[in-house]
Length: 179
Image 1 (cartoon, rainbow, N blue to C red):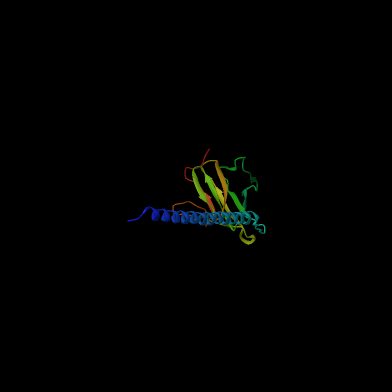
Image 2 (image 1 turned 90 degrees about the horizontal axis):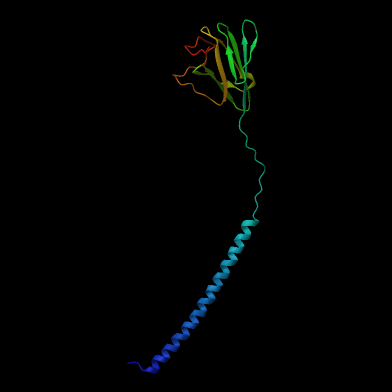
């Protein structure tokens, strides 16, 4: 059995150890907090004082312009498009259409809208030696409106798609002429 004096001595030793442990824990905690503040300050300073230098990089897209010339083959009169870019082809007149591509894109093609029909030209290179295609168009049913839209890039003509691919003339679109 423990007497009262032994219990008091044991309690006072435990109290002293607890105070000493507490002080050690407090010093270690304060040192840890100070160390965290130093690291946080160093990281913040590094973040805001870092600098990157780069030579100027220019990003540019390809450009392509297709100049369209529509000439009456019999009279050499040039047909011009209206404000919406629509050419009005007269009935029973043979027109020579010449498309010339220029620009930084490697190739282009044109989409021709004839009534509700859409047709596509063959690829037109933008290189000086091969930058032009020429074909004829004739409409025998009525005067016809044709819209020519320039597209750059490549186009693969599906089997069910009408096109000027490797053709030199276009005649009589079926029921696509407008009055």
